[in-house]
Image 1 (spheres, rainbow, N blue to C red):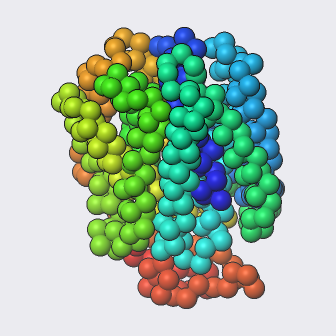
Image 2 (spheres, one colour; image 1 turned 180 degrees about the vertical axis):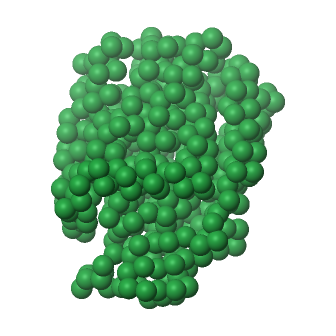
Length: 420
């Protein structure tokens, strides 16, 4: 599931910037088009999380979303829609459907796994693998078709995305049945619980930091493809180069449970922020092409140690009945509102600088540096955190007390150490 879902986005997202440039779309419109992912990841995930927590099985909603998403990708790949305004409409509809699916995949995985904190990293690394492998396949496909020169668009990547999306729509029907757990909960009760989670001091610091970090992440996808091409990297290799970060991401996801045990939540999350700060700092120094390419490895550190580790952290702080909504809350702060404003900011910056201008990376460097200091000073994990275990069933019996860091168990209430 993770490999296929991330392969859909990995097929065309790294090449969208050069595709838009070939269509003559630059500056503010480019920022708005990239921001469609953020818009779809803002309010819609909370609605989707509410649906699967209370009304609809997760795997059915996933299948429906990717079936409709496939049709929209075919529309883009066919070249029928090339005008900026219509591209905005189609991409907005697409991400309103697909944006919430990433948090839904997380919640489905964590409900299906016996010990999410130890096992989720191994599951999530397949998403990274899917993104990386599909990037290589797109590069090979472009070289075979001869679509390696500027001005031709990147339609091959959109056709690949549509094909993979169709496979996902069918495959999701085979996923473990994941019915709603919060049946009978009133909407105001669910909202009250989510608000209470967000108001916990350590959770609030994490969400504010995540929002700030994702103000800077959009520059990776909006600026880096054109930046690398301006430095002499052949277009056909941009997609493959953008997957280098997945190499470090896979390695770190494999050892993520060990990092949590060894470093704790605070230092693990801080490592991810530090990686993004160092990445942008190196680009500010006007590096040669090989250093700019090698620095892509740091992106994987940020994704594994902050984004994925943050998802696990939030899961450990939320009730099972609200885990889909809790993951949606993280998605809204990161790929939603944070990335929305970040994409608009990136579009304005790109419109005022040249493709190879290193000053474009100064603003994200300063933002991530300030966030690192804020997080280190403000994040204080409590002495203990509480995980409300799901009521035991034949499929999901009560977990042993040694799992998930549990030290005391009373009925369905499990007390865990703060650092996992």
